[in-house]
Length: 205
Image (cartoon, rainbow, N blue to C red; front, top):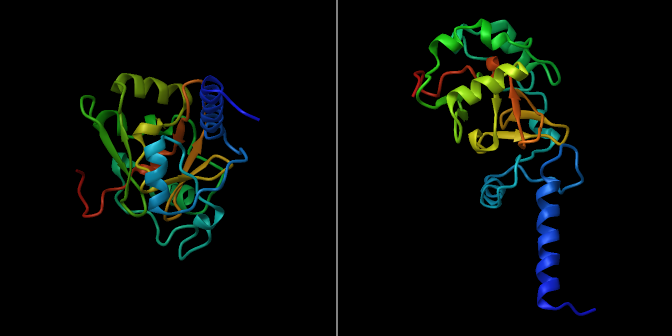
């Protein structure tokens, strides 16, 4: 079968649209992406999010699904026991809706500059927000859903992955939350306790 130039362009557009759609839904039949930096960079170039991993990332380790407990002095007065349970011994549950508003987070977080969020176990940089929106927009969206809510451009894909069922995790096995897409795109609904760590080195950047 022969295609003229116009048909080829239309076909290319359909294929591109299908590719974008397949990455926008949890549990699709897309190819499982490997757990490696080269894949992360390729997806970043093509803007195909989220970056996926397989179940092996959450295999049992020295402390639940992580190599160690959460840090002792978490930011925003987050509760240690709650954080350790959710980060390391949990795959499905979350801090209660609105928990982040009961901490010192709203009093301490910058209202004028983006804030970096770090893995409560390793101190790896996981998220930065707000990016591409105002702080008010970020806070309103988070309050409306009950948990801090991040968008694709606010995720540091070097250290963050998603499973096909929507679970959002760190590359070292910390449970973070879930990707719950809405009309705007991917929305990463994240437990504050999971991202209340201090960066490696012990002080906030």
